[in-house]
Image (cartoon, rainbow, N blue to C red; front, side, top):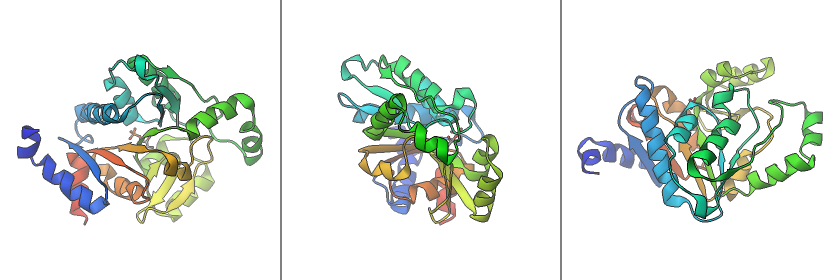
Length: 255
Ligand code: G3H
C-alpha cells in the first residue's frame, strides 16, 4: 500500500471515483496497451476484489475477452467449501474459443476447485430461433442460474476494436458507426453519453438484469479504452472498476 501511495495510484483512484461517481475503483501501475504484463496485474487485482466479496453459495457470471482470460489465469484459490458456481454471462458473441465466456468460466472453476455450467447456444440467432431456444429446458435452466448470479465480472472493449474482432453483421456495423459507439460490454455498444446504440442479440444476461446483482466488477485497462470505460460506467450498474494507470490518466485528461 505504501508503494501505491508514493507512486500516485491512490490519487488516481480518488480522482476516478469522483469523475465516474463510483465508490470502488482500483488502479494498477502501467498501461496494458504497451505492456502485456499489466493485463496480468489487472487480473491479479481483480481476483483480490472477488476474494473479498465471495461468500458461500455464490453464482459468479463472467464474460469473455483477453482481460477476463487474464483474470482466470491469475485465479488460484480453493473455494471448495464456498460452493461457488461459475456460469458464462452470455452465449457466444463471435469470439475465438480462448476468449469465449464458456472457456473462461470453465477455467475459473478449475482454478478454484468450484463447479461450472456452460451455455451452449449459437452465437447470434434470429428472433424466431431466440424465442424458441430460451424455452428449451436445458437452456432455460442455465439462464435461470445466470439471472440469479450474485457477482458479475465483465470486460470492457473499445467499440470498433470489438466489432472488428467479432462476427459483426452489416446492420450492426451501421448502428455502431452512425451511433458513434465508443465502448462495448456484454454485446452492448455504448456512445460517449453511455447510451446503448447497438445490441447484439445473444442469449443470457441482459443489461437490465445487472440491477439485481450485488457486485458488478468491471475490469479493463489501456489508454485506448478510456472512452469505452467512461461510457460503460456511465450506465450506472458497475459497483467496482479495476483498471490501469494508462486508462486512468487518459480518462482524466479528457475531463
Ligand atoms: O466486452 C469486452 C471485451 O470482452 C474486452 O475484450 O479484454 O480482450 O479487451 P478484451
